[in-house]
Length: 260
Image (cartoon, rainbow, N blue to C red; front, side):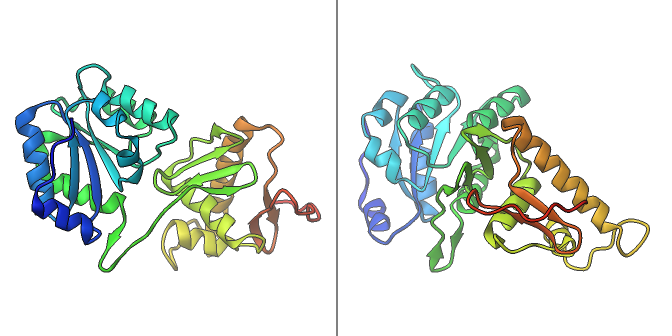
C-alpha cells in the first residue's frame, strides 16, 4: 500500500517538485526517506514492496526518478527494475543498500541503474545524486528522452547507446563523442573540436601540436569496434582526412572514401 501524502508533500507536487518514487520494506527507514526527501524539496511517493509499486504503474511512469532498496521481500530490487523495464517504464533508477558490496554494485549498473548508494552516506548524498540525475536547475529541469537515429538509440539519462537493439557498451566519454557527432550530423566535426570536447579547449597532447589527432583517431577506432561488435556492417562514422568525422544517416550517400 502506498504511504499517504501529507499536506506539505501534496503542495510540493502542485508546485512541480522533482517527483521521486521509492520502494523500501523497512517501516522506519521508509518514513525517514519520505520525511528527509520532502524536507529537501522533493515530492515523494513511497511503497513497502515491489508488488505495491507494480499495482500503480502510472505513478512509476510519471516519476522523475525511482529509488529502490536493494533487498526487498518478494521481488528483489533488481528483479523489480527488470519488471519495470519490461512494462516500458524507463525512469532513472537509484539503488539504496545497507550492504555496499562491489559485486552488487556491478550487478546494479549491469541491470541499468544509474547509481548505487550506501544508506550510511546519508540523505544529503541521495538528494544530491537525485538532482544530478534529474538535471534539476533553477527554474528549469530538462526533459531527457530516448533519441533515435535509424538503428542508433541514445539514452542520455543512462548515457547508453544501442545499435539495432544491442548495447554498444560505450564508456561515458565514448557516449559523449557519439552524441556530439549525431548532434552535428550531417556536418563534419574536426579532430580539434572532438579533442576539445573530450578534454577541454586548448588541451595539448602528444609530441607535437598535432599530437591530439592520434588520440582522436584511437578514440574513434574504439567506438567503431564496439558498434561493429553489434553489427559487422556498421559504417555510420565517416572519416575525412581534413574535415574530421561525421555521423552519416542511413539515408545519406557515402562520401568518397578517405584514409585516416
